[in-house]
Image (tube, rainbow, N blue to C red; front, top):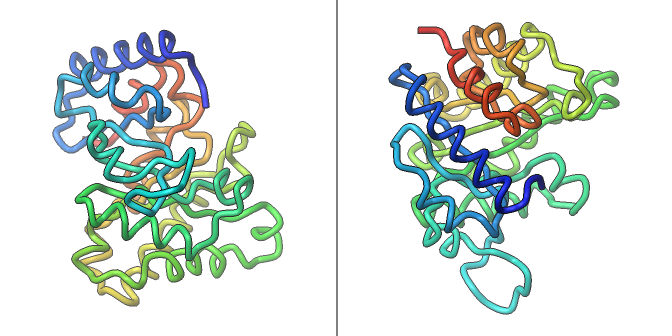
Length: 244
């Protein structure tokens, strides 16, 4: 929840132009998670296939008496192709359950859009040694009802809650460890070939200084970038940090 319309317009234009000019990696997709009021206008400013638009949330019903909520068909009509769901802040501040997030997954896939499914543990859960079971449980509860074909349309974002907005980043080894646990968990139900096709992003204080090391890990397929995305140069640098 950052930037006025005018400020956001400037940031988006800077990022789009930088990505067009500088991002040469053929397999990197930049997705900008934009606040609801700006989506329709900003979709018209994106003139490159290298950049796609994401909403930061959705409501799982298609329409109805849900004042203040925004449906997936509304977002699709505004030019959105990705929707972030299950972010730790939605879970913590708004009490969103695994079951409710599963409804959102289904609603997004039904409209042909891509869910970016967030999962992650608190510091207390990590210190108690239950972090692997907790995070794999989030996947089981919200994603394992899907067919293999549907699951491959989901992007997973691991966000260690203790490393979000704190300046504390999981080491590249810690990130790789959890990402491998998640991929192995997916493989246990869907097989290794399916699990290998799913992008798992790291989302804990990704910055220009640590992106290269994080993205070099074999099971880290990208980043869900927070504060660094508010600086166009830093964000573009992150987008260019993938191994060739």
